[in-house]
Image 1 (cartoon, rainbow, N blue to C red):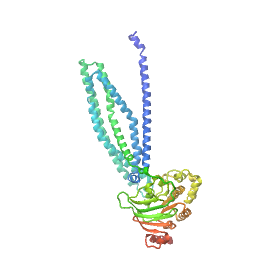
Image 2: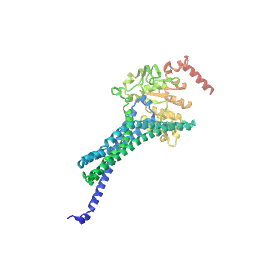
Image 3: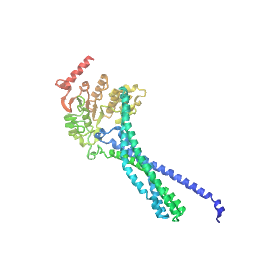
Image 4: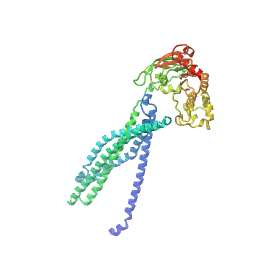
Length: 534
């Protein structure tokens, strides 16, 4: 048994074994990548859900201070950076540690002195990597912020593309884009330079380590301290140890990106929710009747001059209150305070007998049907937009709300009727059509209180008259607060409130205000003259 013939007859065994182990390794490598990618995507999905849900509940004060583009950047690109690190490098870090922990003891068993010679520069590489990491993570943050600024410019330009074209501002917008784009490029070049300062020296140190091990090992082999086989084994094992060390630069680069991305995400996640105080809040057992009482209400945005100053009034259930005044008088801010978008600096707002701060925000907002000054429509069908606040609504309810808002006949003329898809922000509808669809949405929810913030500014006089008559037919059904600049829209109200520079200067029904000297009487005379001329 044995000999050349015995070996030659069985050479197929190592070939088959090699193929078998290669196949097994390939299968394990495949499933390793699949599982790593699956878990990374699962973690990032949860992170996206958590971040998106958190943004939905952040205070308006915080959202007012943030750019949309930067928030989008954090929810998409930053989370993608985390996904790449989790799927590509976490497993590699584990494999590298296992290799180092497994191989170095084998090297020590072969020859302790040559082992020390073979790895003594590794601490230098690790220290150099630590120094590099501390330098580069600040640059990653600069690059991320520059990309966020660039995203903001793109988002604003695309959203306002019609305005850009209408004013012929293409050249200006291109130049405006060029500035953050140039800054993003410069930050990227700065990052690449820093990376090259790490990659080149670390590769040189790795090669130097192999060279030193080869020189010392050759001397020891020539002098009989070790065998040639031991030297070759050492060099092979050293390459295995140095492989994860050489990967350190790439890992540190992506780790730096990931830490910066996590930091930017946690800047959002650490922001307190606007519902943080709702844990102690109650919701009334009895339905809200719609009575609103405001006493000595004052509010200012940030530390600017007060937007509202000592505002007081009462609206009884089913009444209509009209609010008018010049731009910047605080009319829309009053609406926002009623909806608890902000809390007042001083004073009280009561729904029925309850202070609004003692009511859950979600409950408060459910009591209002709202048409804001700038109505927002989704890129969906008209039916879905109207049904937005009351998903269980039936077809006849949707059509009835559209009739009241004088938009049903217009919708019926569309080829697909209520199934007509409208563009982003309702771009395919006219301004008046958007307002009336938004009004339909508010009326459909049939709320105890209806807030109309300049909701008829874009409709013609005839349509306005039809809508007002429809609203009059609902008198006593819902408490209604109307903001408008056309006094014809306000004249039917039970009470009219005149705001000037954040303070109430006049209050009363139309019949009284046109007899008092003040803003209302002057505007009524001007608008009557304009109507007479036209």
